Image 1 (cartoon, helix red, strand yellow):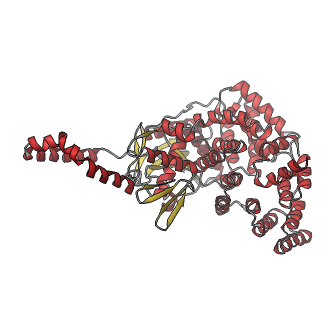
Image 2 (cartoon, one colour):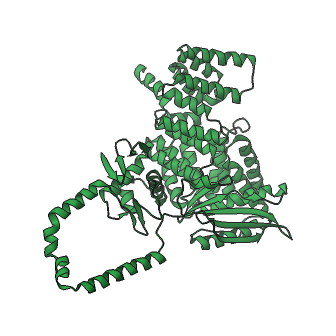
Image 3 (spheres, one colour):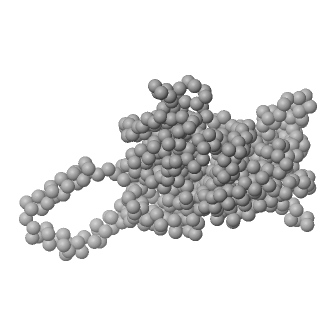
Length: 592
């Protein structure tokens, strides 16, 4: 199906927008939204109608619609404050303004065939019986009214985007670095539950180019720790992206003992300045030391790297020694132990997954209705038990309660992909990326989802983006290129990955050379067999993927059979969704 939107031609079958030599590919969900707006062109389409028609029975938040509309506007080069194509109608929905030549053709047809009827109607009577001077006066009054309305009425836009920068420690005192990290994480947590904004965590100092892809209704929050006469001060400044005008600012005395009160006061002022509804806990339930250590651990965990994760674990264990009833410390530890099916801690812990289950049980006794508990239970159901539907039920509650919770959207994407809802999974991971666009680990999460959806070109772009942000994407490039049949690129990426993660040796150098020579000579199966032997048994799934690329399905199956119980559940959940492993299961199905 093709239809016109202004100068653009929308090609629904390929999810493309074309104008002259320009062609832009959009998400399938965004195309469905555009198609519905086109089918109702000129009329307002409510958010509930969009959800019922486009998302059907899936439970989603309004944030999903906002992201789809923002993506459409970006693709169409549409200005939300002066829209040419898509107009926001506050409290009602959206409508398509310009549908191009087809609308003109309809208007021409009406002009040709409908003129006689119009002459017999009210316009004809007015023209015959109302004096010309009175008609001119009415027209002038209407024009004046339009000018006045435009002068006092600001064009409606989507929910404002709030860019939250990491808190800068401008005191030159490294002792306050942990406090800066604490303020950042606490601020993001407070704002994550607001439905009135699109939260964007910006991990670097933004420049003009940083906001090219975002709407004009954007604000920048800059928190800092600065030197005061009697001690450190917390300052926050809210600035308009478009005008560079300071909308709001605050300065609060702050210390490791009183940071919660300072941050809560600041959040109340920010909420008032932006008209937000946020839930603010003004008084800490636990000791200041435990609170500070918890939020610092949360910040370290947000990096999702091994060494920071181990440090976060140590901090959380200390928190529970001080405050055994700190429920959020229990759920945070459970998430740490579950991540990558306990892979960070198997070397140091007897059974991290058993510990995760225990911490979830403790948190459920202490705070049975908390968002963090729902999230931890969803992670355990998905990654440990392989129960995707149970995980989805918990995750839907989390994204409804905290629509800007990036980890919830990442987990939601994984759960959707595990049950085969690939387009929904891509949309969910895109929402996660919109909340934290500078997180390189999140870019790799997106590579994984795109890989499962067999959108290989987009997966490679996401892997390149992760590399630009400082995280190697070679392992993922190797998988994606291998699945798409680009074997030489794939083997070269794998060799590059091994060189960057394994200590150099003469023996390894010889194996790398053998793998590269094999693929250069057309023997990609031999190359993947060599690479499979180099992977540690603890990375059984990766090892099995390489053997599957080598068409050595018996070896791949044997590797997976030797995995730990939790990883077997993971394989059971994902095996028929992973393009590379599907080959192995196709082999088993034909031989058993």
